[in-house]
Length: 242
Image 1 (cartoon, one colour):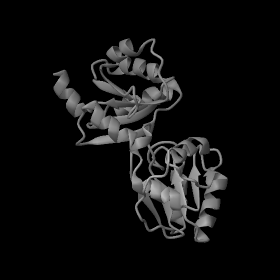
Image 2 (cartoon, rainbow, N blue to C red; image 1 turned 180 degrees about the vertical axis):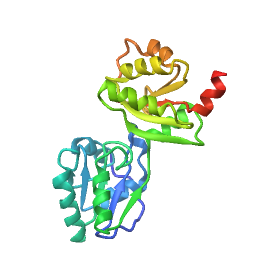
Image 3 (cartoon, rainbow, N blue to C red; image 1 turned 60 degrees about the vertical axis):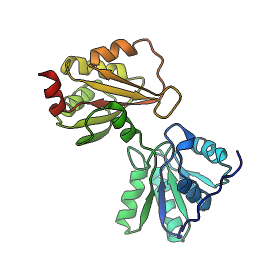
Image 4 (cartoon, one colour; image 1 turned 90 degrees about the horizontal axis):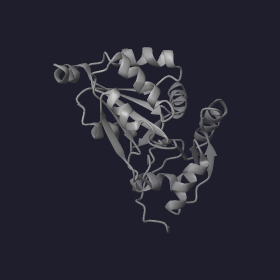
């Protein structure tokens, strides 16, 4: 695709830009985000191949560098040095907002310690999208990131989450969602929950019901990627379970 007209922006050197990127549908990227990426001296990305697909979609030629969980001890000092030298640095995650369950947080902490500025280019969010898709109360909600990998820790984690009065939002792998729902069916058989998957994509789907009901629907299905699991809070659960 040829380049699209981009807005004029101010991108002062030495100011790190955390840029939100699409969570599935490439059309969800903002014009401001594209303008920042186009103007950057370097774009740090979790997976440069993944980010390159977004850049190619909009005809952008950017210098890409890797910044992920496995190299952050080296990448963070490099980014800080670039910013001190007055370079224009943008940081993206594979999808959504950098720093949210993402290695970008290590950079934000370092910038805070160094008293260096940064800014955010807002955009798509799987957690907020899933909250709206669930139909659960948005008045009070808690995002708890990824569920623990080990089953014992996951059970304790979920038992604590089930005590929250507001909607709880967590991220889970498609490979472990059945195991997590089995735990929930055991410890909270009447609690209503939702699973949102393929958000913004062609096969977007939100399933709602008890853990047992969701297991019946999802058994035998081929799921891909990360899923968003939402638990109704105790306030709403109390009303629905009376």
